[in-house]
Image (cartoon, rainbow, N blue to C red; front, top):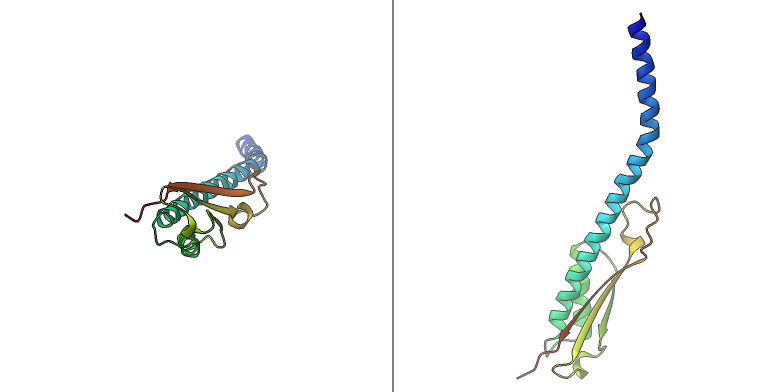
Length: 137
């Protein structure tokens, strides 16, 4: 009889402990998911900016083709509508040896898995790659 009473009291204590710990654990797990997603999107943006820069430094490259290449790479990661900036804006005007910079920016809220449940201080995920323009010779 005393054993049953102790077991029921312990079960009540375990329920209260779970009620206290579960929200904290859930918040930690969601935070890990969100940080992992931000890191994955940053990696995707870096990959896309490098692919765009590789294309942009070739003599026959156009800004529109580079932007399309970057958007295609980002779409392969299921990331829609990245902002792509090509410097200089007219690649045909760049001389061999000039620096070409491709910047990819993604709105962090548009790629969030947990929505507004966790408010990270990151608003934009940005990656940039700079390479020297190739010669036609």
